[in-house]
Amino acid sequence: MLLNYLDNAATTFPKPAGVSREMARCIEEYCGNPGRGSHRMALKASEKLYEARELCARLFFCPDPEGVTFTLNATYALNMAVFGLVGEGDHVLISDLEHNSTLRCVEHLKRTKNVAFSVFSTEGNVQESIEAGLRNNTKALICTHASNITNRVLPLEKIGKLLKKRGVLFIVDASQSAGSHKIDMEQMEIDALCLPGHKGLLGPQGIGIAVFSPSVKPQPLVHGGSGSHSRLPSMPDHLPDRMEAGTLPTPAAAGLCEGIRYVLEQGEEGILRRETELMRRMSGEFENDRRIFTYSSGDGPIWLFNIKGVPSQKTARMLDSLGVCVRPGLHCAPLAHRTLTTPEDGAVRVSTGPLTCRWQAEHFCKALKRVADETCRG
Amino acid sequence: MCIATMKTVTAAHRAQRALAAGGIEAQVVSLDSTLTRHGCAYGISYPCKMGREAERIMARSRIGYGQIIGG
Image (cartoon, rainbow over all chains, first blue to last red; front, side, top):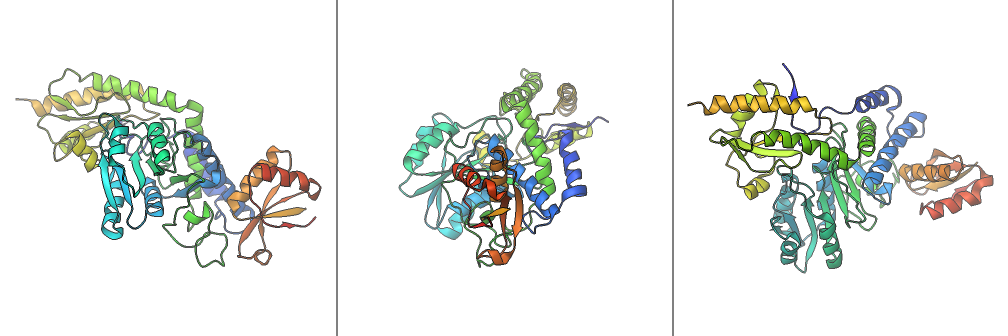
């Protein structure tokens, strides 16, 4: 049976060939402990990590590669930024499209640090919504760049400029946009940019990135060995060491370098255009099919839908039996699902990636028609 | 060779790239912990005869360094 992977919003597959090749080379040839010791393997490993920092800085227009810090995934990166920059008694604003990686952080801060949070609407004029939500003690605005269940993209530059004027920190979750949308940290006035390595940057799982602008000094989330200033009883003052306790995943960073190179070669605009074109083919095929209810337009790399009267889990299971991998449910984003008014058990998400092929769109359409025929019969 | 001490291995790699771009061959080196106040540390080594140029490049690139050893 054909394997038709269309769950790229969860993690991209396949990856460019160079990713696994460089990871294997790293493990076989230079996987010392970066920043620990002076032998050639340790230095070679730290050089590879630096290469990954440089590539991230280049992709996101961050003036200083030392502001690029590595962690496990986007959730850890968001935890680092949110817990590192928001403190006792502060107020924060979040959008109505947030993933649990943001929502649960602010809920935890509310319970443990007396931090209040408000939710701004992404419908209509977003800036007006934000203006209305700002308070005198608003410390930060945390928002996704692109939703993980719709193709809605927030106007980061406008938001950043507004926040800069008001002295509010700007923390951005770029989990769904990095690699397919241009992100310019300086122009967008972003203070902390959080993202995974394994989605649009086409790296492996196991590496996340938090990029801090030179103007912020986050408190560390994890404490331990940093490979520098070992006599100090606390984490060093400077980035990236301040935020990177413990051994970093060099093989994952090696793979990430190749993923980012692919993105730089293809260009974010070209990648998004291709992903969108394939998604339009798929969603467009069902535009006039009255058995299908669509929650997001399919005018981007994501299409969210349900077969009317059929639980999303059942649709996904039936598609899987035909070789199609899609994700049903709430996608760890109950707030965003509430905003889109999906049913209790959520909806089916189909998502294209940079290496999705044309045959996959055709195969998916046939499979979904078959599932709709079977479930809607009689 | 001269060595400029750096606060992190990341800063040392950054300095190496900046010096290489300026035509100075430099190496990242680990320093004996007795050479620094806080234990493990790294540095960047380069020919002493290029010292002045190296310092100028690092200053222009806003790369902070500690003491210069040797020369």
